[in-house]
Structures are given as C-alpha cells and as structure tokens.
Image 1 (cartoon, helix red, strand yellow):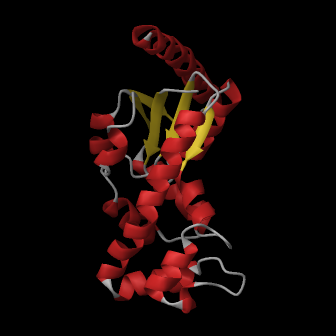
Image 2 (image 1 turned 30 degrees about the vertical axis):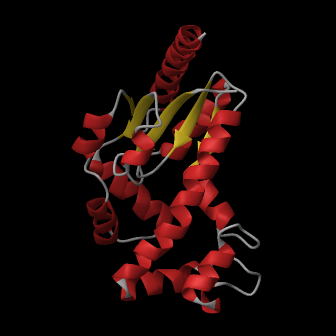
Image 3 (image 1 turned 90 degrees about the horizontal axis):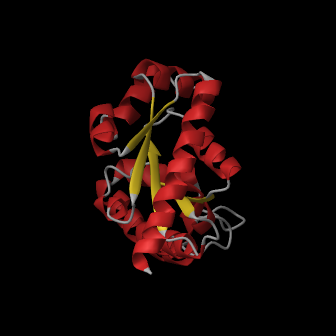
Length: 207
C-alpha cells in the first residue's frame, strides 16, 4: 500500500506521458486522471448514466460511450454545461484516483493530473509535486505535430492553463524535457531514488 504521492503535471505538449512512462519503468505505480476520465466516459462507464440524465441521450454514441464532439459543442454553446459536466466527472475522478493511490503496491505513486496547479484539491493530496517543463515554443511545435492544430489553437489552450511560471512556482521538483532523451532519463532516475528515500522516511515517521 503506497502512502507517498508524487503529483505529476505540466502544460500541454510538455511530455507528461513520456515522463510518467519513465517513472513506471523505474517501478512506480501510475494513477492517471485523464485515463480515469476516459474510463468513466467509455461504453458502460460509471459516469454515463448521470451524463445521459443531465445532458440527454445525444451525448452518448451508439455503443454507449460519451460522444466527445457532441459534448464539446454543448460546452461551447452553454458555459454552464462545463460546470455541470465537471460536477459529474470530477468527484468520481477524485474518488477513484484516491482509491488507486491508497491501493498502489509500490513505495510511491505517480498521480498524473494535467490541471494539478489549477486544482487545489489535488495539490493538498500530494507529498511532492514534479513539473515537466520545456520552452513554450517547443510545446507549440509538439502539439501542432501531434494533433494537427494551428499555432493559434495551441496558444488558446495554453492560455486557458496555468502559466509556465505558475507551474514552476508550485513545483518541488522539475523535469526538463527539451528533447534530450539521455538527460530526461537521468533526471527521472535521480528523482526515483529521491522518492524512494522520502517514502521510506514517511513510513518510518508514521510507525
């Protein structure tokens, strides 16, 4: 049972998933809130009955998953729709992520939360916060290549997130992901050893 939680975050295109995978390679358990959100809104997902009751049957695809395009249109057309959507999803995500952190069979758990800095509820659950950082120009370049978006579209998403400075101010640790894979691996390896030590110290203190 893991009780040492490392919150992992970073802006869009920073490489959070790459860094999370490297921690998993080191032996950490990953609890990914994005993956939980997809699980909850998949066909048969636990959030689907409430979403259909709130927004109508049109928000579900033929197989019963949330139709993301329809939901995006609803949220765009009606600002209150986002609040209602988050009111259904966020409590379930918080509950499931907390359960999985507690059940993790590793000395520490990586809790990946894209909007960790924006959400106080997650920050208070973390023993450490590690931020994946890279130049904003590189973020834009990566997302354009990955998602086929224009630079302006990527900048609009970035503008809705915490700033790079806000994320760095909230960080206990920073992983620089500027395309140097060897350096990236070395940073994660060093942090892994640090988190093993901190986890052991926390366990000892609680005994």
